[in-house]
Structures are given as structure tokens and as C-alpha cells.
Length: 215
Image (cartoon, rainbow, N blue to C red; front, side):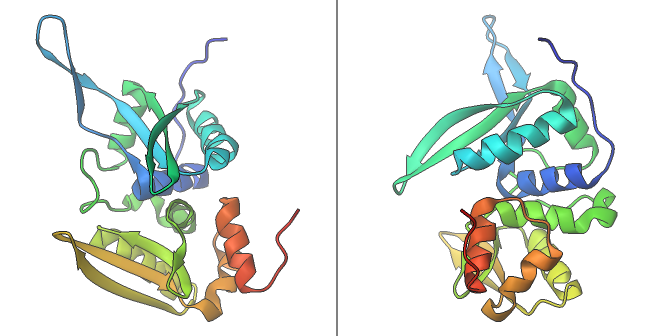
């Protein structure tokens, strides 16, 4: 069956999707060489994840809901006994759309920022960001990023939600990083205010409140 690509309106699903891409996705500056030796621009949208279940149950269905086409899952690498998957698709139509709403392409780590289009759906962007990171930070739950802009965004949202949090930069291998996390005592409140979709993160947060994980 052939599907025609569609482009979504600005809504909470797109905001959550963009949070995922900002947190652990990429619109790389990719090229391939033609037989005549000239370089051809590629239009790749990738999302990296260690949970094949999350990709199949959340990311792929969300992508299809938004764009009416599904990306494929590829084995990327194995790092520190952990398999990393790349859920990827190549589409100039979708790539250009994501650029048009101000998602950063290329090496975005330091310069990533939340597009202003999502003021109404900031909590869904935050949910996407938190669903991509490893979650546990010291005795709390949060997010690490090389982007000062994303760190400030998380700080403002945690403050708005009245969640006690800690934010600190650190220097590692020649780069500045930012770690921001909700203090342990307020971690259980996250599920009351932030619409997370990642089962692993939800179970982790419930464990802070000593709530049994669902069977």
C-alpha cells in the first residue's frame, strides 16, 4: 500500500515529536556521491534510542500519525553493553517542513533550541525531551544537554510547574554541558504535570513514590 506524505498542523503531537528530535534526534548535513563525482544532498531524519519497544510503540506510530509514513529501525551500534537503534527515514518533504518550523539541522547539540511555535504546547516539548534522556540524575530525575538554551527551557518549565530542581553546568572533554533535574522529593509530582510516554521513565518515577509497577 502506498501512502501519501502529509504535513501536520502545530499541535501537541508535533510538539512532543520535536522534543524527541531535540533530545536525541538529528537532521544531519548528509551527502552522497553521484556516479559523476558530484555530491548530492540527503534529507535524513533520525531518532536514536536504546529501547526498541519505545520505538515500535511510541515513535513509529507517532511519526505515522503526523506524516502518514513510517521510518524504519536500524541497528546503529553497541556501546557499554547497550544496543543503540536508529529509527530513520529519508524525505525531503518532511525534512524541509521541520526546517521551516525552526528545528536546527546539522551538529545541533550546542545550538538546539525550542521553536517559538510551541508556546501553547511547551509541556509536550518537555515530555519529549525527558523521554529521550536516561532520566536518573543523582538522586533526582532530569535531563542533560550541551545546549544552554534547552537547559534554560527546562529550568523555566520546572519552575512554572512548581517543581524543586537543580541546574549545574560542567566541563567534559572540551565541551560545556548542562545538567538539570527535579529533586527526589518532587519527582513523583512529574507524572501529575508532564505527559510522559516512555514506560521506563514512568516506572522509574513511580518507584520514587513506592508505587508498584504495572504488570
